[in-house]
Image (cartoon, rainbow, N blue to C red; front, side, top):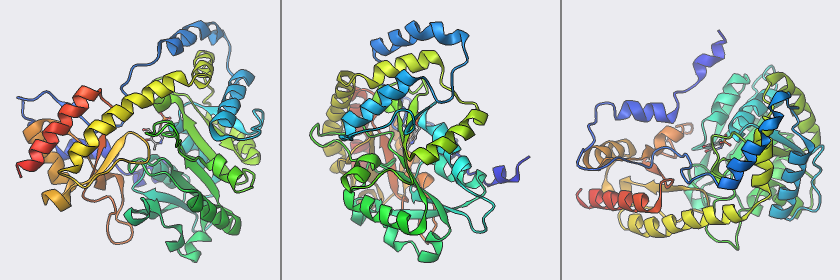
Length: 400
Ligand SMILES: Cc1ncc(COP(=O)(O)O)c(C=O)c1O
């Protein structure tokens, strides 16, 4: 077997299962899970109908590059969403079967693991696929800690020059999982300067870009940042997804967009990788990218939950409304005196509410784990369940 497989870390949910294996949740309460970040709002009917209408395509093998209508729908969505003058659907866009597989396979295509000291920069805390992709590409992750003083953005200036020289790829997540932070134009400017200096590729995971709380302030994306700074898309590829935007995590549909030269090579890689999108999923994806009404409705449901739950939890934990995304990132130790893992165990035992310990999403790379003593609370259930879960968390904290 590939020895690099032994370097992979257990997934956070496996660690959560082990943590609470001996906990018997209070059966006086119905179980509420804030642990797993999986969208739970219903899939819009018109997307299901487009999927059914697209079934006729099943008799053909789809092209890895996807059909022109899908690439055009994605390019037009990008132009509308980010006020971009011109995205070339033939060269600057590729459909992918969910951003997860693309985030993983991208490192396999981009990173030269045979170069001594090959490194990939990951945010910390982070989505664990970045780390696994790095390790299996034969590189070593360098963890750039998110800094609460900088709205949880990594301080790229704190990365030493001799590390930057070995960095081939930078993963970033904006809006961030788990912190919800959106990178500012100033953060992007600095990152582009560093990329110009050291030559690394930027993989910008933007799969939460459509879940935000102020209709007037949609999160900045990497392509828009490049455009606003008067540059092209060189060494920049963004990853987007319908999973959260359109409540179709089971459909496996997203795209990558950006640097045409990199996407050309990535397409070659993907031809062998074998992950072309089913024609029925392509049809449903076109319908989804072409419609914003369902996305606004989806956002309004999240807004209601965050408006209700955030002030409740802010009474008992260090937490505030994130820039975007569907997680609350709450620091628990300051107000409760409990570590993230103890908080998780006791909350489950006494109130049957599951959260995810932050430390499972980060690494102690530079002394301390920057995610330690935070918990991630995924507000994915409906508003009543989220409110009840928040009430129980308040009771739990007040009982300590
Ligand atoms: C940060 C982040 N990136 C990517 C993904 C993958 O999403 P999908 O493969 O459904 O597009 C997730 C899923 O939870 C995520 O949290």
